[in-house]
Image 1 (cartoon, rainbow, N blue to C red):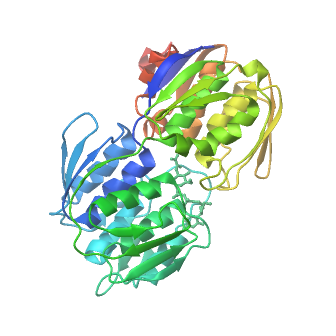
Image 2: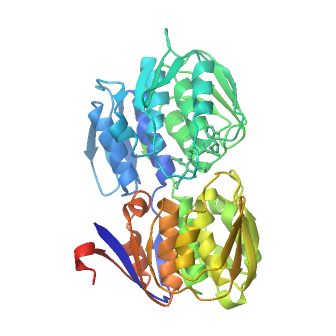
Image 3: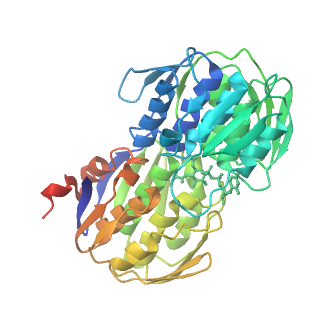
Length: 424
Ligand code: EPU
């Protein structure tokens, strides 16, 4: 068991390079099942969700070979089972993309129900609705998504009753080899949906409209392998934006797509944080004592991301005055609040709104990562707080952040990972 230990307060200097995007990487990795050929995928982040996804593919019979630091060869031609056991699939959310991709290729799947961070109920009714619209019979039984479509998936019109990232990705995957044109309305518009569509188009698919709320997929059985590079992770970049802002630092964030960050920077600039955009960089300059409080609402892209709710909370604790976050995507995303309270934060929760009475410096404490982004928030709180903060359950953080300790350390933070036995 390991912990992250941080001596704060920290001031950060220099530049940080953003890794490939977790949520695009896992969609593309499982998307290779539908392609049924050899793909070379680059810019895969070194995180446990990617490693687990590659393990799941290998267990299904795919050949996975590491070609470089972030580059892998994935050959799915000899996949021998459509079964992903619940013990493995249940360790992450994106394992349910095995269902869409296997239905596209084999017309059948048996995949353990997904796990992932606990933000309250996370139903998959919209995924099931999409599969059924395409002709599959779906049973959710004994912890498994058990589905089959006699004669393969058929093109359909799909309307999502809520904006769902996973549902949109699963519908694209399931439709990619069908006969005819599938139309998805009220589709999610996140950059990782565009990245998956681009990857599949590189493989010979015909997908248009990704990035808008209507996506058209003209099915094509003749997909082929390709070389593809995953986009940079906007949530990792957002986390470093908050790290710089909350510590009154000046940090250059490199290897980003500035357009993707506008969902955060356009709102955060209301606080007075200064952003200077380059072609693939963002310079963040902040003096937290001069920042203004702000009211934020989480929304589907291009709105402010729910995956930045916990990290932004740390900044709002540091800004004098009353700020608010209204969480509209998940019912239980404020589980990090109790941990921040242990560090002296004054936060009230009423229904879906957290109110931050900011301005007092956080105090170091022993805290837990209660989920991935909540864990990142604890790291940021440790940078801001006076004294030594120790964070437990850091495996959550390692699911989605590539070398966060090394990256913050190279920016000047006093941060290290230690095994619990070393901790005194
Ligand atoms: N929803 C339904 N029915 C469905 C699917 C979703 O009611 O069939 C609801 C959910 O309960 C939620 C809302 O729709 O209230 C949005 O959920 P969505 O399906 O968009 O979330 P997801 O696909 O499960 C992905 C990311 C999450 C991110 C959300 C929202 C991946 C692997 N996960 O989850 O990322 O929070 O979209 O943007 O892409 C993270 O990276 O830390 C993370 C949790």
